[in-house]
Image 1: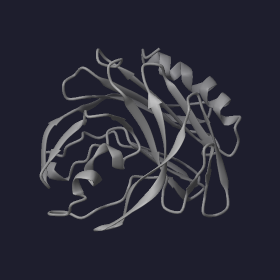
Image 2: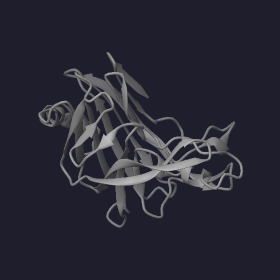
Image 3: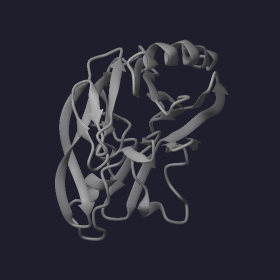
Length: 236
């Protein structure tokens, strides 16, 4: 699912996790987000490693290489060998709309055993700002440790409360939880492995709100507009 406004663009990975014709190309990327602001790529996945026999292929296909929510020891897609998949979760409850200039997309991801669910709302604001809302649901939601991950695109610098774009522009972060900077694997070219910065934050039953944009006031405006959408989905 994609939303665009001027030079701003956001993509939410809302398609089924596995293409029946080519299941071995699937990745554990349900509800992952990619974002460009003012024509500059800001958030992305970790890049592309090699194919058959590449030692990094498993990591490249895993949830750690995508800007979504990871539950420790509990993949949403069972990946094995170079081109094999087993149990897989499902994306559902997809909805979208526009509210006060915010273009929003919401959906859920349910793990293969049906006992855990990730709820996510992503919105593109009137001036290209990005809002992301995450929460867990289901009978196992309080028994797991989950982390949200937002991966910076190549050339984007990450600080505790801001992103520094290659064109000199800075985008501020406002969040309802602690967000920390980490290094993760990056695949700038096939078989070339490096590291790059990303934000991580804990995710639980209570919704976590994040907003990234030119000004900190964006978070207040975003929540005022988008919280009714979250509640309308029955996720309050």
